[in-house]
Length: 154
Image (tube, rainbow, N blue to C red; front, side, top):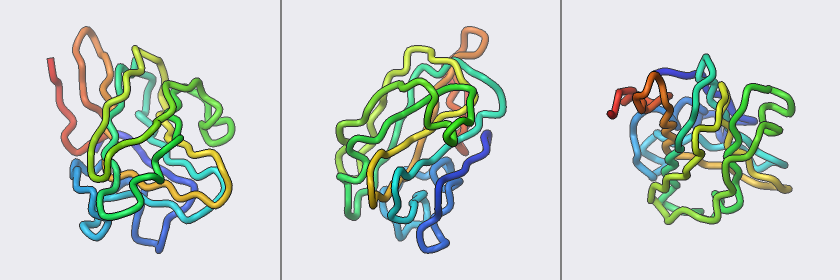
């Protein structure tokens, strides 16, 4: 796996941040492949790509067994700062929704950064991510980063 993950908290002690980049797109929490925070104010998840890249897009797989609306309103933020746990970096997009168990791709148009955060504003929120894939440019090639399926695509 390329990248180091962290999140604001871990639900039930068994839904670690690294599970969102394990290469498994299952949206079923019981499959052990989703990152999940406790219910808290402003939950976040972050991957450190270990160096700055131009991020072209981010694909997120949502939870499918329940609670698909928990992703609604989450922000994707990309940058080089860890101020406010990286949640103050420039915003790529706000996620309106992702279908239950589905994956959606969000274009970030080459935003540069070492950190990719997914952040939900609000009181008593959970954040669940079943897979997060970052597509970056490197030397004219697009690469999928921070996943067990790290590879060159073109």
